[in-house]
Length: 239
Image (cartoon, rainbow, N blue to C red; front, side, top):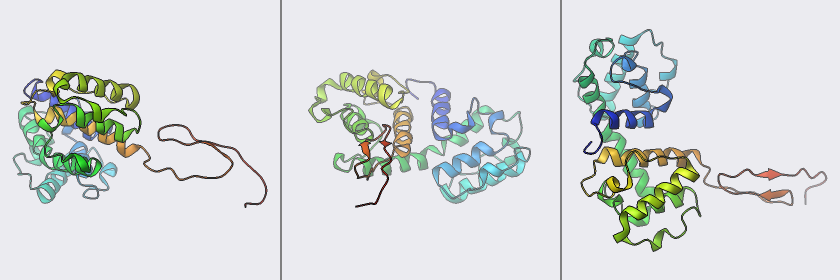
């Protein structure tokens, strides 16, 4: 990245995609092939559905599976062979370069989700469309309705201030931290990967949040998104 070392950005991006694998490096953490197969499955669900059942001791076979599926589903070139990836002494830069090829299909997915989620905002990229902070504020309010009700009144000229406000709401109400600071997010030359990390984190929260609540009856006390819903039992015949 421009403002953040590429390795730090790639680690943050990877752990946003497959947090259950808690990746710390681009060497031994990839030897079992499980992280690679998980990444393939995350980007294209159903492409490697049984990855969690793979034996980590079969690193060579697992790496070969992941590399083959990546080539088949995402046209990712085989710049790294399974024998190398499963070796504890694998070259770090080679693995990092290989994993970076997954950013394109993943970001394509992210863009589709953003367009579907904010259809009236005409989202075309993961960089300059987010500089003013207005789209980020709108996204936060869409994920948690009412959390940023005045997003449409934000001034484009107050980009850093807008971003700071949106980041603050995201942190306090959605437990989502940004990867870079507001001033960096407002920079037109911001690196796409750095910008995408927070958007991916917000997407994760969105997918974990129920979007529709349908309930009725005298026993209902309260119902709202991301809040407890309590019911009282009422015995007797239904109306």
